[in-house]
Amino acid sequence: MPELPEVETVRRGLAPAMVGARFAGVRLNRPNLRFPFPERFAERLTGARVEALDRRAKFLVATLSTGESLILHLGMSGRFLVETAEEAARPGAFHHAAGRLPAHDHVVFTFDSGARVTYNDARRFGFMQLTATAGLETHPQIAGLGIEPLGNHFNADALDALFAGKATPLKAALLDQKLIAGLGNIYVCEALHRTGLAPTRGAGTLSGAGKAARTKREALAGAIRTVLTEAIAAGGSSISDHARTDGTLGYFQHSFRVYDREGAPCPAPGCRHVIRRIVQSGRSTFFCPGCQK
Image (cartoon, rainbow, N blue to C red; front, side, top):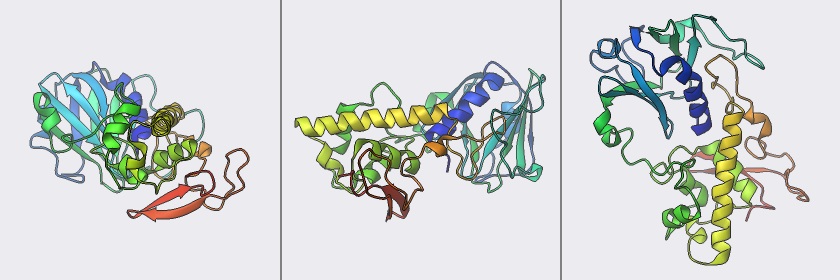
């Protein structure tokens, strides 16, 4: 599933075509995705101006001039293709994403600018919903989401409050969307390796007023920000389905230190261990048993 960097990459690709433009038409090629489309979906969107396009956790949120907001989720394999009046397709700086079939083009948005945005989703786990902007934070998909890891309030003090008294494994705590919104398996594995923290240690061991615990929290908060920022700059990670809005693939996967590198030498200077894989809560965790404690 696309994680925060992939969703942010998609947002940045969509914004130039969508923000400030009005929906001139909406074509639905099927009655549903993961869920049925909202009642009168095309009618409610047509004529609406996109005031802003934001990201909340792994959701895209388009604020509309009608007082409603359009919530978009990519699911497992969802992707958007942007076509403008100037160019029908952008070649991209590296290689093209394979496997996009027109049969999976389920939604086509056209805008008064001449731009066209097509939503393609082979597995149909993504969804689109409309809700009143004034009540957005109480919407079932948005309510209860935790702090944004790239927000101004994400720091050592925030981690102290979130982890206090928690015996749950550190990785599980970082993946809890009610604590921190948007973090996913890939980037948690990468951030924990950079800070030398074991994914299995109790999250509560990082809380408290002690200097050692605070130093670890500061390092972890910094590593999370750095990994996410680097991944966004690289266009995200293309493991299987993620592609950018011009059809090209992200390339942060070429910078992985531990994720999906089971049996490879640990890249930390002086470490002679190899990367191990374990399963936590049904998900693969990649880490170095030598330098992560």
